[in-house]
Image (cartoon, rainbow, N blue to C red; front, side, top):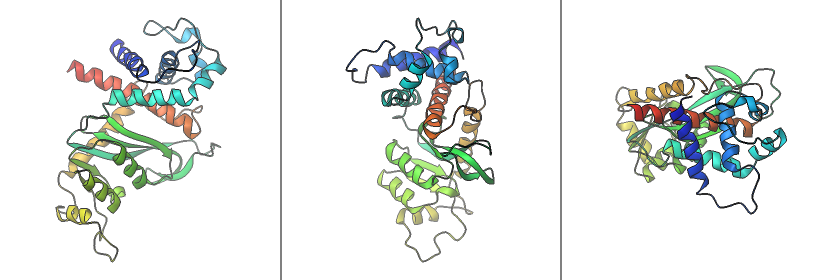
Length: 285
């Protein structure tokens, strides 16, 4: 991680912290330090016990005092910590700044077949079935993950996409693959003055079920079975690749990241590192 990337992360943590209401009582270790320690630990692909060791820090970040392992774990599990962590990611991602074209898709986060994690459910992954979790994302044309959620691998992609599109500012067009060909998504996009396109399934619109007017209109614009400009949807595959293709990126889940709350925190911290890197590259250009 470069100096500029860590500086952007730390300044964003401090800025977002100022927007939160004050605690009823003062803690020995500030929320800023706890969140920074957690993000530092995750970016270095280490467990929490590594984050409370003095030798784990260097020139870029060196807290004056460190909490105990039990204190660190307790603070990381708190609602206030998770609220601050999510707000930091939203701030770095520029959540309220959509682009004209956006994409919706998901990425599987499988775990080993011998894992006993009850939250890791069986779902589709890479043409087969595996146990694990899934990152659902709404991504801008310039690669920012402005909307995201992490669920078990068997969660309904359409339902998660509906919630992401409901909670996130949208551009003019949202593109998705055939898994998102659903009337509810078309209707939601239409109510928000957005055109939604998903690759239609075979025989789409030819049955006896009620069809959304917005979906039928989108189908009428398809050429050769594909929506207009559908080739742009391949960009999200590139962005998922970039999210997983640099040092400290979202690689396969390590053995100590199990249970849904831990995976959600881990993925959010990885997205913070990704957005800081993306911001640094954009500024350099």
